[in-house]
Image (tube, rainbow over all chains, first blue to last red; front, top):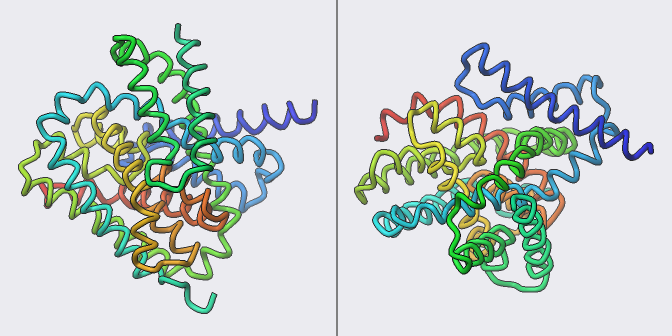
Length: 118
Length: 224
């Protein structure tokens, strides 16, 4: 019972913040996606103790643990791009892999290979 | 039928997840495995994506709250992040900038069309954000979301091997790098390596998404 109310409170908060973020972005005509604003709002509300970690930790923990799952249906959408992949697949693949390797190296080099003292 | 496809997706995900704990190969990535199995299944039954799309619409309703939920690991690991804030921030900023610039410039040299270039420019942010950004940039939103997912899968598959090759052992840095280049899918991969990697991955994907969203509308005209 307590678990159920925790889940409904947590999920409602996360849905609410996502909707609020989208509303703010639409109203102020910002060039920032609503979900990101929702994420920042959650961080701020946690820091100011308006939202307590206990309220959302189960639902937020579950959603982030299975984050990969929510991308699968979108990834299946790649099958409708068979034509594009035939025409531009190889250069697209090269551009993706090269940029991934460069971005990864730059990030890792700046952040520190083995961590500084830590 | 939609419910059946949702059930199949959950089943395929759970099986892929089990398999991914067992193998050590770039192909063990959960999203890659599940997607490959689902596409093959659809093709075997002679179905197009239209049949599957209602299931996608329902499952992705949760993607908004799931993205917001990343505020929690961000909050929990704020002290660790703040302790290395300057390095972490510049790593995310320059990592994001370099991967976008290389992708779009390389894509331009390889004569990719503008729609694909816009999709490439938003590839390193999580797909719901990529979708919105591409729409704002007058690109093809569905294509951008797909390229972002492809980028996420490729990064999650190749990233850990590249990091090993470069001798990057620090879990803080590994998570940061995977989250920066491959958003949610990279972060999900990082989380399987080390809890701290999952946390820095979540922070990195969030910050790189904010940074990209603010900057890209101004940066893109110079790249295309």
